[in-house]
Length: 220
Image (tube, helix red, strand yellow):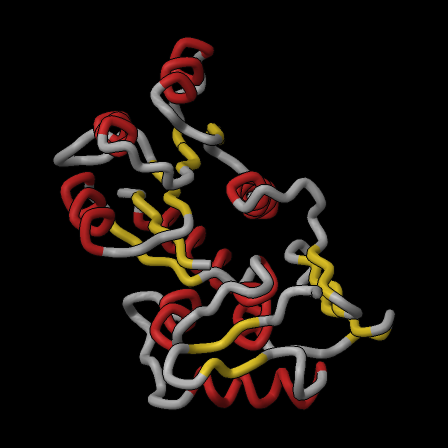
C-alpha cells in the first residue's frame, strides 16, 4: 500500500514514516499543504494521513478540496485538535477517521488497515484465497494452515494481488505499492519477488499475463 503522509513536525513525521515502513507500507512524506496538494494531484495513493495544522495550506482545506473534486481517497486525520467541534468538523468534511495526537503508532497502523478494509469492501481483517490466508495486522501468511515465511516486500506484493483476485497489476503498479520517493527501485525487483512467491505458494497461485502484469486467478 502506498500512503501520503502530510505532517510538518519532523519528529512525528519521521517516526510515522519509519514505523509504517516497518509495517510494510510505502510512504511519501510532505511537510506543508502546498506540497501535499501537488503530491495528491500527481501521485497515486491508497490513503492520505493528513495533519490539519499544515503551513502554506491547512489540512482541512486540502480535505474539503479533495471531496469537492469527487475524490474518494481515504483520509485519516491526525492532529492535536481534540475538541468535539474539531472532530465533528473533520469527519463532516470527509475524513474517514480522526486520530488525536499523541497516539501510539500501533493504533494508527490499525486504523489505517481498518479504513483500507472498508475501502476494499472487506469486513474481515484476514484475506483468504484458495488455501492461502494473509493477515495484514500480523504480517503472517499461511498455506494449508502452515506459516509461510515472507520478506516485507514479498508480503506487500502478495497483499496487493490478493486484495482483488482476478485484477491484473502491472510491474509499475506493484513498484508504486512497494517503494516511496526516497527508495531506489531495482530493474527486476518485482520479478524476483514474484518468483520467490511462486516457489513458496505454488507456481499457479500467481499468474503472469504476458505484456500486462500479474494476477491471482479468481476462484472459478
